[in-house]
Image: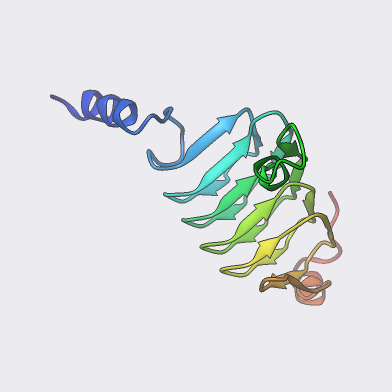
Length: 155
């Protein structure tokens, strides 16, 4: 068996589709993922029934969950359906290992999401450092350093 056959067999065994990132990245639905974005192994991008946009030149570490769905109300019989909300991650964003980006999160460009952070519904300004659970946001943490090197950011 050659490497290509083995990869296809492996993906069938673990019930996963091939993707350009890593065989152990699970992608559900049809997320929009920008060019030169990296997603590490054991991460999940769940865009089923909602929009997920991940910008260009992002670095998504291993063991990251990006998930539009929230089933807790359905599980408790408080709702008939699973709630879903869109997620947007700007360009040049770093997401550390073991983080969770949940439905309703809007992350601006050039942000750092520290390892182990849980990002819930809300808007995070560009150049911010975000850490913890609940998430603590240090707005524009990297902006002056970026502007000293490159000038003002223009999209």
